[in-house]
Length: 237
Image (tube, helix red, strand yellow):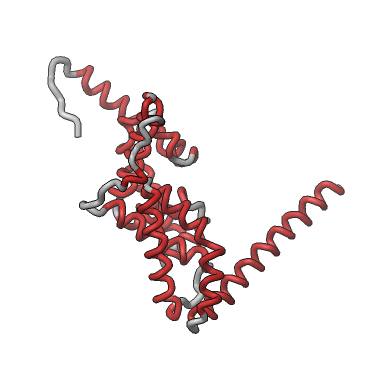
């Protein structure tokens, strides 16, 4: 009983701290919306590390991630007066950064900066080269998803937001989020099938578990179809 009580107290303390952090964020955001540069600088210090980590996961480039975060903060400063507090400040910032990171990945003229170029020493091993290839495949597959599916997958599966937070960020219902996630994960499974099993290392475990049955079924169906018609050449997309 004492242990249960201690656990409940611990969870309560964490909850109060989270509420306190969000209240502080809201106060800083309101002050920054009134053009308090000191408050904005505090928001930047509190959230830049997390935003950069998310941008780096999405873009795979340190320089691009830095540019994305800088652009996201500029956008946040410009749009803070219109922020109505319908979502958490962190959720709002993550969505801005995620959108800009995905746009950077999709940009047709995007080049890999020198800082993101493969390290010759690290890339000398076949394992490291394969890992880089898998990571690039995942980023490309995510970037190729339709906009709503892409945003839902990134916010939920890569940024770790709750269904409710994603729904607020995307201004839609939780059921719509779950539907977009389902379709997005299925599309990822199909796109990453040629890279399995290694591609699973680049996405959260629950994503690959949720998509694995369909991928196996599709592979089995293709094998049965080919066996039923031997000698017939088939094209694969």
